[in-house]
Image (cartoon, rainbow, N blue to C red; front, side, top):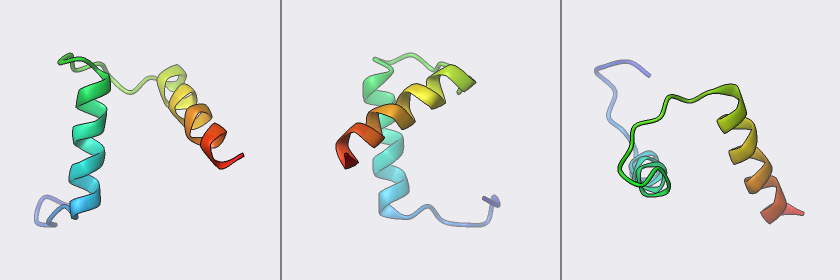
Length: 46
């Protein structure tokens, strides 16, 4: 994403969601965290 691009409403909603589940912290997106989030999302699709 380039600096001059506006975020969509869905992108802003995802950021709010990530902030909510991080409980006010700002953790870096490690491989483990990304895999866990993907696994949680996949459970909803199954």
